[in-house]
Length: 275
Image (cartoon, rainbow, N blue to C red; front, side, top):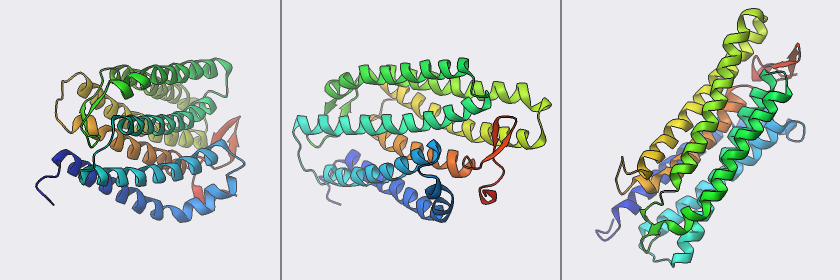
């Protein structure tokens, strides 16, 4: 490449291309399961609908990221308004993916607690607070961030801290409710139900912990505990890919589309056993 290429923009291009390649590989790897298990239930279950919409919106969004990353690496200058629109696009798509993952996890928690009203109210409060924090901080993030002429972030706005805290609290609460139900209920339930609980907690825990770790990294970058030129630029690309993989883990990895019922709980044994 030309020596005049911004090294940060070059690294963003390499990272984005690598992540997109992994997403495409994973997409084709599970495509047969998606066709058999998800598409027939697209209009029947919320999980299948969320999966399809998130799956293809994420691929389209990451493909657009590659195009813009190549544009940054080529040194094409952009107006400040273009950089703000680019930041708005990233904020919106990340929030949509976050809500999709949260909704999938909350649906699982809701079933684990027998669809009780108290757990529904708590889940609604936490998700609503997280969305409100993102909405309040979005404008500050977009207008308060400083960009280079090619839209490489020079200095992220400190309001990312509040977004990170709200996401961490929401996913920590989801993780806690899963673990609480699992350890309080497994001894008195059937073998089939214990197996479902184990799958639900395993996949939900992996997702929640991974997202919490990434957001903590974002929090440390915003507070300048970690201070590198790359830190403010890579978080959206990494988070988009991780959220995209999390949806696959929750649906196909956790076999959430099975339709066996035990005492009002939904149990999934294997995706290939779905009638």
